[in-house]
Length: 172
Image (tube, helix red, strand yellow):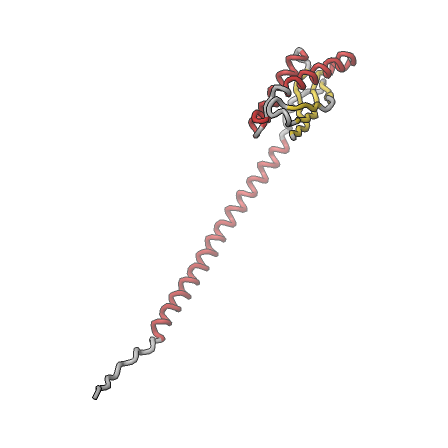
């Protein structure tokens, strides 16, 4: 006949090992809370000091009057909107609304002002027909366009135009 062998059942895990793990987790959690709170308390005072310094610097900056780029003998002349197609691709159109900053002396001669604005508008139109879409893309393209238009306006007016202001530009 076959012999019966009795296999020992594994003993139930003792609760002593589990208690040690829970106690260690509680101690580490409490330590993390205390350290986090302490560091946060120390950093809050540093943040408040930096905030006060920034406020004081801003007040000091407001107290000093800023120098103006222009003096009082200028005027702003709004040009008519300019719409044309670009050189490449020729199905893309551009519309620009702009203004000129001119010397006050130009205002005394109204005929000169209208002729000057018409010549600059025509020059801008001619220039925009030579521009490609790739030249206008991105901030560098916009900055290059502004500089080119400023140069053209200054040359066309013989130095009477101080700045060509690009108010709006739509490319579609």
